[in-house]
Structure formats: structure tokens, C-alpha cells
Length: 552
Image (cartoon, rainbow, N blue to C red; front, side):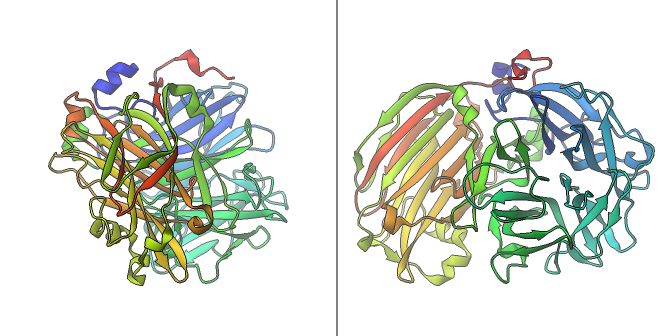
């Protein structure tokens, strides 16, 4: 399906669309980027047929060619479906896949697969050895919750390790397995992490980050967590979102300790994204020495809509990821390859947006855009005092203090109006407010979808998160927003807080034009010290044998 045909069927222009369902294993191999993803060739919904692994390749993380399926449910150990997993590059350069299979009795087990021809840069064919399952389900696993193996890493003792989530005696656990040959695995007695508050977690990820700088680290090169290195443990909560914490990993005991004391309840960890995404997965990009994150964005309209368009679920645009200078939070930013899609540019410098002001950003296609803006914060003496109860529920706070309601002399709301219809009946706002709290200041970032569509049966929530910036020192707040038809990805404070949303405006479905604005509904003017906006072109997504994806 070409780009124009895709857009007529409601698809996005530059976000990866695996046709149906979500991503499993990103991998860089011999000059090519690979994405393996859970793929349902039988229909757009779960429960219809059995899952395979689809496979797409790219030379630039932007344009992708679909190569068909890499794994299919053809064996007793995956007869009921090839479910989630990860890809690993072995010490000799060969790739390997670890994945959860649902066997002929519908029991979740862990399997391995290897490429039939490791020298093939496209890795077209895969072999599932008869020794599978390499990790049968342990006897202490309850309710058949045993899945989602991570990318494996090599310890200082020469043994491979991977983590997998399991409900062990009713406790949500992340357990580690070790192997010398990637086939015979033994479980570590102690879990990497356990949380009795939630019986099962999903989609774990454990990876190293440098304490200084933005360069990524190979998953195995620093497994011991030595000087200058910390680790990030990420877990997903079913029907919820993704959480992470920075800590120290000990590869002798295979244990993990958060750097912030008492942070063993995952629900108190930081969020990968404060909007709507799930199952985030990272990989080390050896070409550019960076760690790259992807995450699944499912649909928030109706199941009948999914059936009608015959596809469901996309990926975030890939994000480079590194540890902030505070050593506690991650910074995420769209990979630089997005610049190859930039077409037209508009700019604004030193513009003042008065109280109640609305200024259109004209000259770019508002349905496919990349907008970067820096707001100078007006005098902080006007900031409202933050009620402590809102610290635990910023989402509810944004719902009550929405984009149209200025406080009594407060700082904000100001930000962007995106995906707006000509009559403004449909619009999504992404904005900031600044509050005084405990002798310092807190920046709140919100994405309000309540007016995003006039269509009934569409999820239209408010998303929110606090931004970890020193606004008193900087006196400015940055916002970057990617817009792609039904996707809005926003990065506040240089990527310290991210909010991703799915929207389904009726004016877009009807072929109408969208508009993009700056706005300020605060009691005092704000200055836009710098704005740059680009129209983005349409990428080639999952076109079979598209040779634009050749290795660079």
C-alpha cells in the first residue's frame, strides 16, 4: 500500500504501522534496522486466528519494507501463537530471538530462534530448533502469567542472561535466567524485582545508561554497572502504561536496587510517557552509538472502526534516550532522521502572545508537522500556590484547570492548539502552567483531548505530568510536538516529560483542513522567544521490497 492510499484509509504518514498489533524486537544488524512485531495475518483484532511475528527492515529508521513473517505458530511449543519477545546480538555477531510461545495446551513458555543465514543482512528466514521450549513454565507460576523475555545481556562470568515477567505465587515478579550457550537456561533463585501490589507485570526492559552524556551503551558491554554506569528497569502494567526507575544492577547476584530509596512499588516510579502508550522497548544502535526507544500506540476509537479500516495499532516515532544530569530521570527526543522528512519551514522570533491571545502558525501542513517552540515565562510572582493534593494526581488537576480557564493571576495556561477544525469545535491543546510549591516552582504539562473530536464513542481524556526543569533559573520552557494525523507526540522541557495521544477528528476523516495555533490563556502575556515549524513528508511504511531502505 503506497503512502497516499494509506492516508486515504486513515493511516499515519510517518509513524511505523505494523499492519496489525504491536512491536516485539528492534535490532541493528549489518547496516540494517529490523523490527519484529506481533502480527495477525487473519484480521485486525486479537482473538481471530493465531499470532505470528511480522518483520520489517529499514536503512534509516524512517522508511520501512515489509518482509513477511519471521515466525509462525507451526510447532507444538508455539501452536497457539508466537507472542512477545526480543532480539539479541550474540558475541559472534549472530542475532537470536527469544519469544513467548503459547503451546498446544495454551501454556506460556519461552522459546529461541536463530537465522538460517546469519550473513543475510535482511535476515529473511528463521529456524526454531527442536530443543524448544528452552524455558518451560515453572511450577510456582500462577494463572499462566509467564512471558515477555527481554533482550539478553552477557555478564562478566561469560553467561548470558535475560529477564522475563512471571506471576510467582501471586506476586508480580521479574526473574532472571542464565545460560552459557543460549539454549540451556537456569533460573536465578532471587528475582530481579518483585512487587506484591500488582500480581503481573508485562514487557520488561533492563538496559545500561551513562551517568554523563547522551551516548548510548551496548546492553552487554557494561552489564556489571561499573563506574559511570547505571541501569534502567522498565515495566508495563496491563491495561495501563509504562513505568521506569534508575538504579544499580549487580550481575553477580542478578539483583537491582533503585537509586531513590523506597521505590519498590512500581506504581510510584516515573512514567516513560504520561499519555497513551504501552510496551516500550529499547535497543542499542551501534551505528550511531545511541539507545533508541519504541512503544506501541493502540487505537482509542471503537472495535468496529478497527474492523472497518482492517488495521490497528502503530509505533511511536523512534526516540533517542539518555539519562538526565540529575541521575534519576530519562530524556527522550525524536531521532535525528526525522529531519529527512522536513519540507517547508516557518519561524517566529520574539513574538508576544497577550492574555487570551491566539496566533495561527500558517505555512505548514498542520496534519503532518514538527513544531519546536520556546516560551519565556512571565514573572513568577504571579504563580499560584500548588495544592499538595495535586502532586499525586496531575491528570485530574489538568482536567479541572483546563486550557480555557486562567487562574486568578496565575502563570499559564499557554502552549499549542493542534488538529483544530476551522470552526474550532474540534481541537487538542498541549500546554503548560507554573505553580509555586515549597519555596520553589513546579511546571505542569497537559494534553487536553476532551474537544479533540465530535465523534461519539472515542476516548477523549486529559493527560498530564510535571516537568523536571528549573524554571526559576531558566525562565523559559520548551515544547516540541510531532503531529501525524491521528498521533500527537509532545516533548516538554527538552524531552524530560513526554505525552503521546491518539485523536480522531471528524474534520480530518471528512478530508477537511486542520489548523495549528499558539495560545495564551494566562492572565499575563508570554513571549515566544523562538518557534520553528516544519511540514513533514510521507515516509514509505511497510511497502514490500522498497529499496529505499537499503543500508546506508
